[in-house]
Image (cartoon, rainbow, N blue to C red; front, side):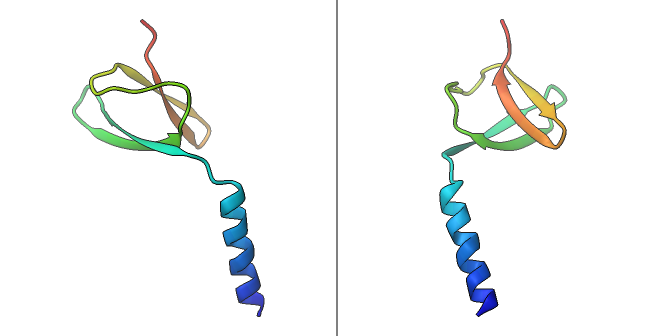
Length: 67
């Protein structure tokens, strides 16, 4: 019963904290590719957009590069 209760609690928590997310595939200047999943924000990304990768501790996100 304890395992079932923990599983139900875990499922309930995932539903409460669920956010819409996007996956962004970034190709670095050296050719390496990275996939970053982040919460969907106000920025819309199009193929070829110049972006920056912002790292804060163990959190990573992508933002459009300043012009």
